Image (tube, rainbow, N blue to C red; front, side, top):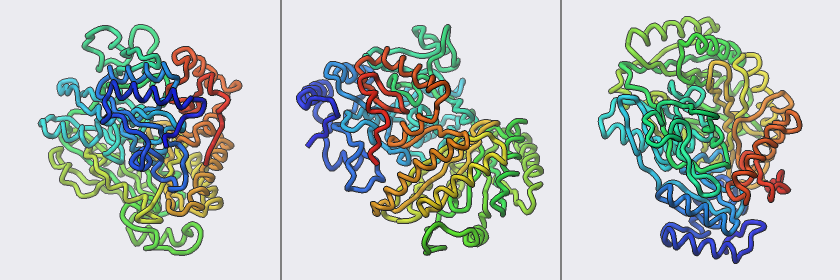
Length: 532
């Protein structure tokens, strides 16, 4: 039985699907089935939940096919929801945020369209993953480095559009994106920046244009579908260093954050440093039952013992250095001198030439060194090796030690008290003035009661964070309206303004309704509906 979106006549959906088969062929129109429920739903919802399922999935191969899909959706007023590879499982994976929508999966648009070694950029389609981009560059002998996130199976475009963290120099403030091709909600196509001039050679080298720059309107957005994007790389450095600092007390996070801010502001560190707590790091290569089998969250004395046993302390700082040997040696000595001011802190580095990065054994060092992998997936098995789940919770906090530690303690207390779960966190200094404090909330996905408690507790954490004055930078599809409700300056003036744009460019309200809390006029009364 095909899931029909609310306010859509089943006959209209049937006609739309028939037209889509006519454009794409039967093999690229997948109707709801066991396969779609497994692959195109929230992967961590218990099997008994039927929230956020698509009515069908379509697989375009070109911008022109995306345009035709959008036109068909408009003719029949059928909601559509897009993903690039749909692999960010902590935020709902490939699940559409509007139940019954037709999902446009861009996975088969997976070409690297251009590699410009002289100017250090590529042009990619949405189905290009971090791993496939790395392999393409390596196979071609290109002396270029990619700035990676933690997992290599995600989309370069998808991660960028959702403001996903990556750790190299161009990861700072999401600086790698330059120039997009976009299908608009009426089926038209435009190019941003200098690409708005036909055949302009600076399309992917200059981020502005003549007049308003609109690229960010298509990030975390339901105002268009990005089908191509320029992405900046860095030339292969002579040397790569992965620098580590280990701290032994929980409140050492304060000094660690303050040192990170100073080192970033003075540009000793150009990439995106991460600060990871004991439980997060332990989950990368161990199981919870190795250390604790009691009720509730792991007590602090046990965490202290874990830190000593695994030699990871209470916090580990990690950052990359990229450049000539003398340059990176000087940067390392500056970082070492700063971090050793923290009592008991240990500082060290791994230093290799560019051509030896791929031989490193530590998967975290590989990630920062531009070599994608999937080793971080081990973390989700913390509670259940075979059926682990996780949700991500990601507030943005000023890069000030006392502020970060205050919010960290509030959120840890909420999760431990309300859900009885361990707080695994990595704080990523995405620019010299802010950090994204990413909580990896893991749970046993085979236990429906625990799963529901976890989803519900995350909503309470949203409120706790808002009371402290902070908001999240992205979210699970079920929590988008809740988070957007706290962005409330001047009676939600930002949301009202974006929804005016939404109504103008998408009058039928078909493209990803409700994404990031932005609703079209005809469906606006559904704002705030939550199913979990």
